[in-house]
Amino acid sequence: MRYLINNLDLVGELFLEHLQLTLIVLFFALIIGVPLGVALARLKWLQGPVMGVLGIIYTIPSLSFFVLLIPIFGLGTTPAIVALTAYAQLLLVRNWLVGLTSINPAVLEAARGMGMSGWQRFWQVEFPLALPMLLVGVRLVVLSSIGIGTIAAFINAGGLGVLLFEGVITANYNKIFSGALAVTVLSLTANYGIRTFEQRAERAIHGAQVNH
Amino acid sequence: MEIFREAYNYFLQNQSFFWDAAGDHLILSFSALGISLLVAFPIGLWIAKKMKISQVVINVFNAMRVVPSLAILFLALPYLGLGFVPSLIALTVLAFPPVLISTYTGIRGVNPSIIESASGMGMTKAQVLTQIEIPLAIPAIISGIRIASVEVISSATLASFIGGGGLGDFITRGFALYDVPVMLVGAIPVALFALLSEIFWSSILKRYPAQ
Image (tube, helix red, strand yellow):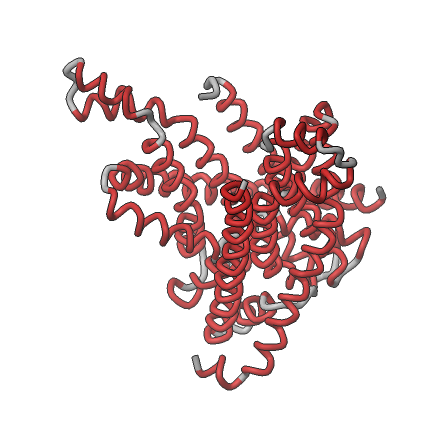
């Protein structure tokens, strides 16, 4: 505990660095994953092959993936962002796709019957109904990025993993404890924070159904 | 491509070291998986029958899953020291939650009316468990083992940092020399192991009809 208190500045800085890496990954994951999920929901024949490829990527051990990316991207945050965004696709697209495909077809039919355009149907009907599952995907992406992000410190991507690796190399156990504690706090907070959004999105849908 | 040729040459020149490391990697992974199965499977069976305890246990293990694997592995160092045994214990801990939670959900997912008709036919509790509940829960349990296997094979690479040996040794050695081909000699086989494990377990899962 003393290490943590004496080095609160450093730990705080690494904590923010870790959070920043996670948010960048989430940003790219959403930019790629949300349209990909919508495309897969429309083009059913693409689901098998695309999910298969995403599954294979997800299986590659993180340290191996980082090493394989070094010849292309070198060291630093870039290979870490690329690898974490690639991992994130499976978690995000799988859940988002479940959300999109489990919408009752009668609801979409009714929206069409009311004269809604394709965009209106997506933003006003499909998106809110599939949002809780998208948020499940977001939560899993954030948790895996925080977790695997610690390993990314090995390829100089910074973050709380720095404390863990330096602690192991210099046998400074307090450093290991501080790093482990900080990253666990970050994970648990993110987990429960996003959960409350999931519940709110869920309630928004059920509330709407009761009103009608 | 030059980089892969260099990696292949390094592999050829260091074959005995490579096979030792690969062997260590597999021994570490299989032992961690085996021990966690031996311990987590019975606990999963047991808590599936206890409503009150199960909620607490499942919540604890779900929270444990949130702790990054690197943190769990490196926390072994202060408590257990360097070497094979600390790595094995940390990896066993990592494999624990998926096996336990999948056993629990598998058993709880068995249709109660099937259990009722089995006991109506005069089966004892032990018979219901071994002849009805466990066989029906096997697909769920196998998917837990599948997740645990990939997790363990992947995290065994990190065991190299706490002296556990395995293919991660090539990655740490290559990094120290900043020699990418040496790192690849560790990274590529680990990725293949993980993929093979995934293929193996999913082929076994395919034998069970979807419920």
